[in-house]
Length: 398
Image 1: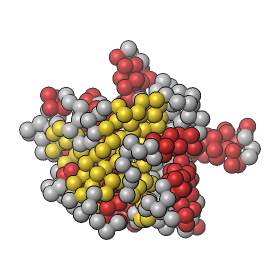
Image 2: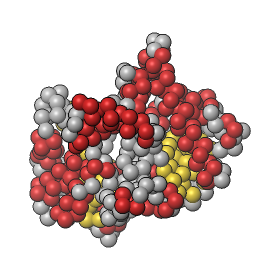
Image 3: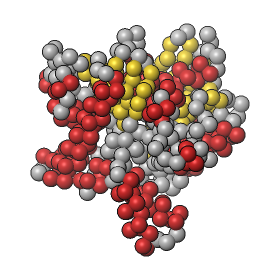
Image 4: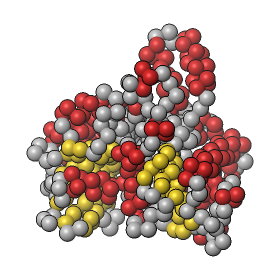
């Protein structure tokens, strides 16, 4: 097979991350990676590193808009300093109820995804913009949408169907599940010995948990949107719907316009809640750990709430799986917060989970369970870009 450089684009609400892989003869070699951070501010960062970690670009430009941010990326990639991509893969958080498969991007597909932007309002608008710009700025190069929801297509109807009137189900209201590319990457790393009963906890600023039986997802914590499930950096996670009605009524007293009131409610549940809302300090676990060391009770409550909630979800998934062979932690918190892993597993002793404190005292890939633990506990990094590359090659018939 001839060499095919594949570019991966992964956009967020205030950042654009990208990487490129050289592929051929079954090999996947990362050539470079980079990011534009701080979109919408005057304190932006634009950097590119080669495979050895050497900075090839290191700038601090003002980034007033996503247009300025993506133009920086496109200009760098067109400069001649980097290989021209043979194809581009886009991390796509959600395609809506009609887009369930990874596929080539067309203008019609972008329109369909944009029509369901409310399902992932922090991610889809910028992803749609970048898709359109990539088609324009890289003419003739195939672009592919790789969905976070693709992994969760095996969810049974009992897990996806919401207890709501049918008219809303017909509008696409269901459990979709997110972080699917991360979960795929964990299974990829566990091959060929994927355990029959597996729970993976993707813990970061956005957090979720999935129950996986024989390689198929049977349940996942995030629901219609990434706001659902467990408490995250600034998201509520699952919450009594009466709380939302109560808050909405308070908002409506000063915001009679229904659409504007809904926007304010969305801001509350997606950007002002979670670890940030409880601690009244930060959505960053590192900041909260420092505050706990200083005796901050609200920071302690926020972290306790986070770990307590995760342990509850893991316990419920053990019931669904009728046992547990392996628990995997991944994501920024899952990989790096030693204390969080210990605090979560301390509540799971009844399941036979025992951590080895010495083994757990690491950041990055490791097996951290004790020799007498009946469940293997591992830490693995998410390799999302690699999975996107694999899907792109599959869709290209390679």
